[in-house]
Length: 208
Ligand code: AP5
Picture 1 (cartoon, helix red, strand yellow):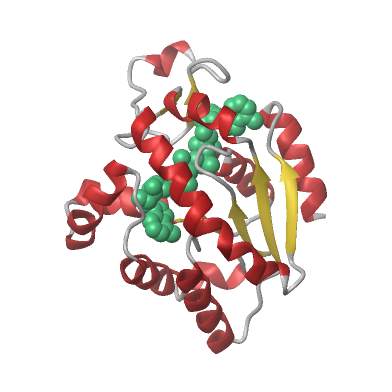
Picture 2 (spheres, rainbow, N blue to C red):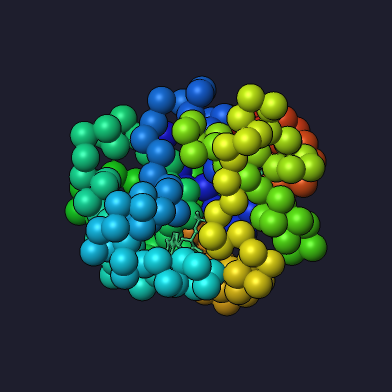
């Protein structure tokens, strides 16, 4: 399976990716996770990306494209991959296309999780994650169990202000990517509103 998980910030891409990976043994390429790891490591890339991420802006295309192209060349991607949070701009989609054409492989699916803006701010500001396992929780919709509740953390970009910037960037710069894939006939749209289990059932049906 070679697919893109697409959708606005807080749509549930990370939540659904974790569930799909239990079922499909493919590489998970989350540019958000990769960039956060770079920030934590204090690498050159992390230092360059940190300010953009905190403000909810997009990291420059060249930095993200280099990261993804390098990652796609690693052996575990040969069995398939799930891109999560990439591409986010038309130039990123073009760079991905060129990389895949050079490698002689084709994308099979762009799965769009649709969630209205009105729900996004509540999902994002209530998100917490477990730094030890990476598990994603929500204070209201999916509260962390008692044994991890003391150690969950909030992402630096999960403020209401950064969330509104991220949403604006999504509408202005990321949704224009979709016609590129619509023209290839590989886009499926899934309603991302409902419980995580309900959404997973829709996603699995769309993949099938
Ligand atoms: P990234 O980490 O990719 O963030 P995002 O796309 O904004 O997505 P999120 O991780 O916020 O949300 P999600 O859709 O995974 O939702 P989740 O499952 O956690 O990117 C972060 C930053 O990195 C960007 O702003 C940018 O600066 C930079 N960056 C990354 N990629 C880049 C690129 N390609 N180009 C340039 N810059 C890039 O769910 C959210 C919450 O809702 C959780 O609390 C969860 O428990 C809850 N929830 C999930 N599903 C449900 C449900 N069905 N019902 C109720 N609650 C739910």
